[in-house]
Amino acid sequence: MKSKLKILLVLLLFTVAGGTLFFRNIGAWLDQSTEPVYSDLIVCLSFNPMRLDRAVVLLKKGYGRKIIATTEITYSNLLKQQLLPEQMVMLPSSGTNTYEEGILLKAYLQKHNYTKILLVSDPYHLYRVRWTIEHLFRNSPYRFSYMASFSRETNGFWWNNSDSRRAVLRELPSILYYWFGHGLLGLQKNPEWVGELKRRYLDLLEHHF
Image (tube, rainbow, N blue to C red; front, side, top):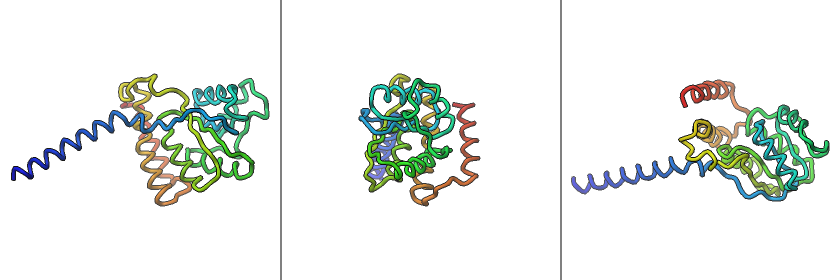
């Protein structure tokens, strides 16, 4: 009896320690950013002023020849920047989520002679971005790198900052869905109920976290 109790206590300690370690380091796990690499294209995912600003700075520093916008609102804001017309590209249609943006990007790259692509998004979003790219482009000749729109360290520990807290809590269920829905089931489009569930969950985060 005593030996079983000792085993249970050890397992409990390992569980608590592992949970604590995961809780503290989840922000670093989500942040898949790398050092910027000189690339053919810089992809600005969805629309966020910080993502757009980072993409433009990278372009002006020579890390890419042009910026690809994955949504119309991104492209319309990109037109306001002091860039040459040939430095801006809009995909044929807008993606409504990260996975759709990956599909549209793949279709574009298959028609053009580019090999090195730098993707820009928020630090806590980059795990899902990287998973999507590796899933859609497996066994492809392209080389991808990932750049955060800002340094997550500027906000300190993720749980202590409301924006970071909501971003992390938003990403975790999305990643689980991507693993199961897009990975295991091979879904290309999200069912309507997924969009409705997502809207309710985001509303919950906005008001309570």
